[in-house]
Each structure stands twice: as structure tokens, then as C-alpha cells.
Length: 159
Image 1 (cartoon, rainbow, N blue to C red):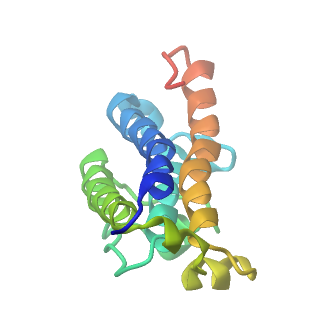
Image 2 (image 1 turned 180 degrees about the horizontal axis):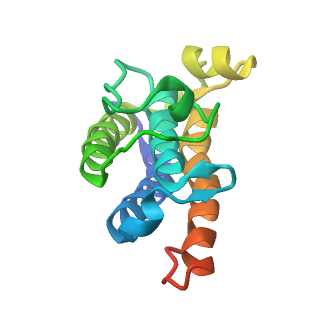
């Protein structure tokens, strides 16, 4: 019989981060969607956070929105593409399904296994447990910029 108690206890923080990203997509005023905060457009912070969830989760990559360049997605330059909330929402939903399925598949014994994709990217041996912490924390970093954008423009914040 498999044991999933610890693995499943790590899912709520990841779900919470994804719920907050989704709330930002839904609640961000259109005039701020392309506004720059922290050097990048609001939609870029969202798309980048989603792409990181996809990248660090083992499995086949989810196709990114068509109008987003790799440099925009990986925050190598400020975005100039016009990426709609609908496109980002579709991308988000596909990645959320991938992440959720991955976490649901985990057993406690899997948490100590090395995540090869993450380890290669960070040049360290990162376990699946480290990856779950990253999946919960990384979106919150970008949401800090996004929340500040909302607050500084007189809107209700996400946090």
C-alpha cells in the first residue's frame, strides 16, 4: 500500500499560489495588463510564473501562448507582444492541470527523488520536495510585483 500523506500535504500551498495567479488574471484591469512593474509587463510576470510551473513540473511541456516570445517569457526583455487574458487563462488552465496531476501522482517515497529538469536548471540536485516548495513560492514572488501594481494604481490587491 502506498503512502501519500506527506506528498498530499504539500499540495495546498501550490494550489494557493495558483489560485492567486488566477485571481490576478481575472481581476487585473485591462489598462494594467500591459503596464510595467519590476521591469516587466503584468502579463509577463503572470506568463513567466505559469511557464516556471510548467518547466519545473516533470512531464511534457504545455505549449506557450502563440504571441509570446521566449525572451518575453523568460524575462530577458520587457514584453511588447499583445497577449490576451484569454490566451493566458488557457495556458494557465493547462499548466494547472499538469501540476495538479503530477502532485496527485506522488507518493511520499517520491519526495526524495531528484527532479532532473529542475536540477539541470538550478545546477543543484533538487528533489521533488524542493520542487514542490518552488512551485508554491515562485508565483508568490511575481504576485508581489503584481499586487504592488494594483495598489499603486488605486485597485484592490490580491493578497
